[in-house]
Amino acid sequence: MKIYLPEKVKYIINKIYENNYEAYIVGGCVRDVLLGLEPNDYDITTSATPKVILDIFKDFKCIKTGIVHGTVSVIIDGDIYEITTYRIEGEYKDHRRPDVVDFTNKLEEDLKRRDFTINAMAYNEKVGLVDLFKGREDLNKKLIKTVGNPYDRFNEDGLRMIRAIRFSSKLDFTIEKETLLAIYDNAKIIKNISLERITDEFSKIILSKNPENLINLFKTKLLEYLNMSKEDDERKLDKLYYNLKLLNKVEKDLLKRLVLLDYLIYEFDIKCESFYEKLIYSKKIKKDCNMILSSLKDIDMKNLDKFSIKIMLNKMGKNLFEEYLDIAKIIYGNDKNIKNIVDIYKEIEDNKECYTIKNLKINGNDIL
Picture (cartoon, rainbow, N blue to C red):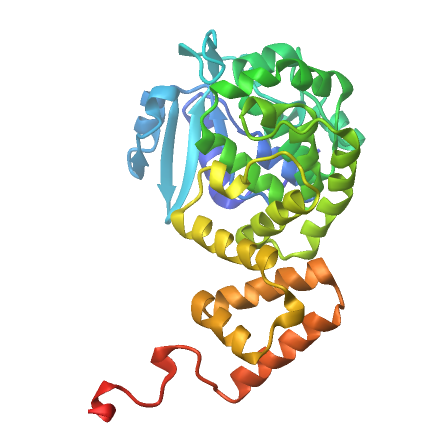
């Protein structure tokens, strides 16, 4: 089969071959192309060592930040391409990173250390698709399956358990039975993973097209081992799962989806910490989430007149108030109180009515 490669990617691969070394695109970019998706970037793997890559591309600007782990970033016409030497990884004693990384000249050794079969394929125009672990077959079956023994893969890096849920959410795939069982059995390993890495994967799940798959974080006990939830009532979780589909009615906006998620957890009385408070988000996101969520919980919409709405606008600001309205519309649907608030807000804006000091048409000098 033939895969389209951007000219700069072909140039890099051909230049490495000209120097008697191998090179392939690898991982997510191969997966995405086979799914008909546009890759975010192209990772390149090679039999050449970092020192050799620096020499081959000596006429280009190179970034050595990841060189200890075998990665050199080459900048061509402003675009950055990561080129990584085939690697063999040592033992993972902390379930996060290998104790040692050794370079190898065998592509197979590099591919078999990867997380999932759909991410363990390589391609170049000289050899074609290299698929040693039936990744393409799993793509066709819509399966998330580890390369080799799932217990080994998750013990190497506990974050892979959340990544499995993330890929199932992003691609609308099913997690293969043995892989899912291994997540249940190894959930405690997640305690070794930094909240920064977990937050990144969590954000990708909540912004995916299947955010309801977040329920697997509850059911596998991953959240319990992160000290975020002790909910074990299956009926509650089933109701939550059904209502998590509301997240897709919100645009792919992190703030709005975090607020709506926490509201649903509050509404269904789920034993769970606040995600935006517990995970690693900016102070601004935490402050804005808290303001919108407290308004949704504490304010009775039936009693919102123009004066009350102006007070909210003064406190929240126009942008945050509009985001509050967007979420309220999803929660309450076509409720007449929502329509009334929207109409009043439109009237305030159309008439340029004042709700902050800076909106006043007079200032201190006028009063003096």
